[in-house]
Amino acid sequence: MAKGLLINLDRCSGCDSCIVACKLENGLDLGHFYNKVISIGPVGTFPNVEKYWLPSQCQQCKNPACVEVCPTAASYRDPKTGYVLINKEKCIGCKYCMYACPYGVRSFDKEHGCVEKCTLCSQITADGSDVPACVHNCNCGARFFGDFDDPDSDVCREMAKYPAEAIHALPDPGNAQPLTRYILSPKVASWKELV
View: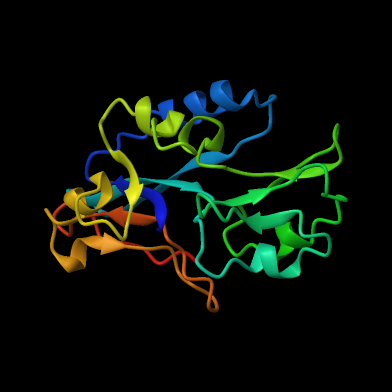
């Protein structure tokens, strides 16, 4: 089982409703984010200008460096759901996982002295009855959640509508193998490899 997010950038308007939904569902304070939306562009010369929005959150890597470097096993892959999570009671606040994450999607909660990140809303999705708040509240229907190993899942059915050149992942600096996928059709914009 490889549950994760698929985000259709052809549809994303950069409205930030995913950010708001995430903050409300997870009770995040000001300045804390599990999800961010990055503006890519504009690039080009008028009238040939391209721009798209790139939501960035935990990529649910198959080989997460954050888990590998954690000295207390606070960062772990849940055996039941397959999600990469943090046990806040075990976290000693060393921030090794933050430094190891190639995507910069972990943050430090100074008040509680522990690291936080997207959990795919495990509090509501672990039993398979719901989707993450960001997916549920996406105004443009750009976010999908499901099992990438199940051809009948929402993520696989949506990806099947697009050619291979429209399916993207964030760059893998090692052997992390990020699971999150993005759809960006060449007719909309050119995928930019972020370094």
